[in-house]
Length: 361
Ligand code: F6P
Image (tube, rainbow, N blue to C red):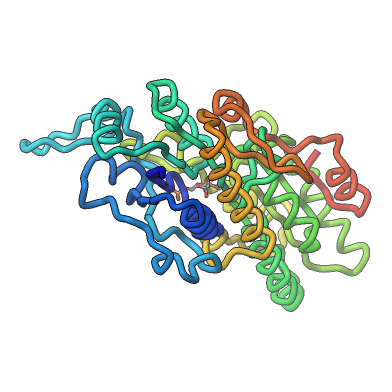
């Protein structure tokens, strides 16, 4: 009999609930108990934020977006914002308290579902002696140690569908539509959706871009009597010699800057340089919402079941990882070492270039 606590941390991604579903079912078959910790580690700080997950709690959640446990990207227990009675906000370390509560509550293992930030926290707990198994999630697909993270396929589908819809309005008005998509410092969402959604230009962080090249492509379209263009810009894309565009004023307790604004900037440049009617839009959190695609559901469930197998085998301090077609695991220390970038010598980048998509270089 084992007692497991499960949490979801960082930005949500479609498929989180499917992992929870798989973990609860796989544990039930083994006669183990599962508890859910709300909003990351809150349940290990406050008993009211912890609850037993029974089969009925997860009955049909595998097809739903979001996370039934809630999530936060400001809940790092090693650096948590805390407001004292005088209203002063201080950053404090509550990790020892969490370690004590984990033992006191009689848990055998923690299954931490998260992106690189949450997995780094899980790794630090593992180093403190907590038996931890990590499950990789992020729409950004930027974890090097796994072929795929769940959430990515859904985000790409959402972005592709948006591009499909933008074609008709762009064409009706002879406009340039600039679409900013998520992905942080990696261009996966932009590249996959841009190719699949018939973009003329795709700008990704891995390729510093020149506005002149972007505008040349837009004007070249006119030679073929195509008077509109679709430009996909990853939020972390950077103009050659420029810097990443992010929102002013960081949120307390947040480890990453909040990216955004490059789409507007590109649209403004296109307007001024080509004289074409240009609009920009930010797809934003739409990409994180909705029901996970079949691919993401299946991957999430495979991750959940594999995580429970690791617990059974006593393999802790590891993250489950897809090494297609196999499901395996890697030490957390390795999993958080580097972020996965788009390989410029890969077939997808070649495909983009060969079908005439401008990458801004
Ligand atoms: O990491 C997932 C992600 O959606 C990024 O693509 C994006 O930059 C960031 O999270 C947005 O964070 P928030 O939900 O705090 O706005």
